Length: 291
Image (cartoon, rainbow, N blue to C red; front, side):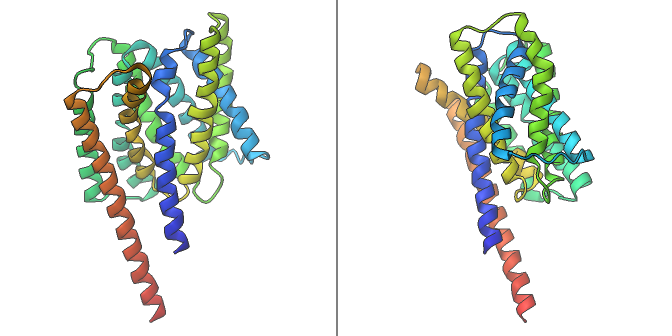
């Protein structure tokens, strides 16, 4: 029962993580600064938040810890740059090719083989996301699209390497990744300093959109599979237009609503089926032990 509750909590934490991540596109677009300066500043703030949470970080310098940190740093830098070079819709849609990479790499590196329902969910989710963004996709901004594709690969690697540390403390990888990003990006503040609104947005990005959700993600990855940790957060891009609607009054179209509903239903069904199957397996195992 305890394990069941921990797993359910992990899935809920991933949903909350995606909700906080969804603030990124709107806030990044609101900061008038070099992409690397934005990535570096928000990571510096995030590093402080995570350090206050960890208090005494344990750097083991293991392969998984360093690989996760590098993957994290590349992901946040590539995603910010992609948002500046292509549309926010392109950047987030292309980045969420990550579950495909996780399904393949997870089976190889983690021995977490995707089931038929996993592949079906990936297919439905990708279709729903295309439908959701079909009115906003743009073939221009080729370099931004390439960077977004690379961020999808690195995000997939990040999920896998974080999951490798399920028996340890994966949050140190995020702390280390933020420090790396800050070292790379902060010097670019000299190109153009943000205005007052920009600094406010950077503060929110560092604390609310990056620091807190990655702490939650680090807790969740200890119970959720790598595929779940990359698949459940696909609700992030679906939430983006909700913030735009609430703050700017821009109403999503019929196709966007249909696509969003498809994605939410697919992810929800996947979580329910997975949780049910896990519970049934645990009950069968307990009965076998009792007998």
